[in-house]
Figure 1 (tube, helix red, strand yellow):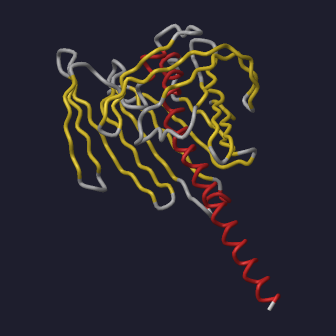
Figure 2 (cartoon, rainbow, N blue to C red; figure 1 turned 180 degrees about the horizontal axis):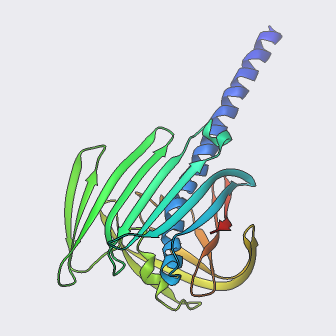
Figure 3 (cartoon, rainbow, N blue to C red; figure 1 turned 30 degrees about the vertical axis):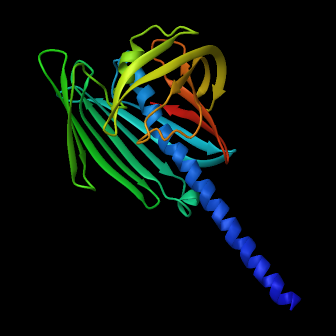
Length: 267
């Protein structure tokens, strides 16, 4: 009888452990997805400031000290303007519990405003496949056409002023002189909604990451979008304190641990 009871306890413990592991893995990549887009936003800062393209950035994503994934950003010129491509993927071990393979791309007009935005998300069983086209007029107004390819949904929006997608949005922030104690704002279209995103400039710090040591400016975006940013906790981003404003480190805390995202290589 005791032996049978011991087996049942072991089985329950095993099931509980697997459930906890799955929950942690999913939480890791909720954040990975959030970082995936957010860092892409800030990568646009670097692209605008540095005219040499193509250029690539590589990051490692850690959950409570354990490597959970990698993120990559490529930027290049096209005949129409700049193209930014972002990818994120889980490590081989984490993929056993919760595989992530995400792709986001933004094509821009020569003036830096978006022309076409694509997002393809694969996170476990969760999938998203969306596209947004931006049509500029001769005045400051803009028409935005949103498509959800998985649900066969199309919606059109008209705005009195131009808006950005999440990848192109921080081009405008990059043009500003970030000053400690002052917030900057950018208009973003994301998931069929318009957001005026606030970016708080907190302080300056010297930090060290695998890519080297940097003088940085610490900023805190006040995220609102549920479709991409998935508000799961405060996010802090360290940008190089120069005209490039490269995101070199990101930190966040959630209910199952803390996350560090660090720049590994810049090409």
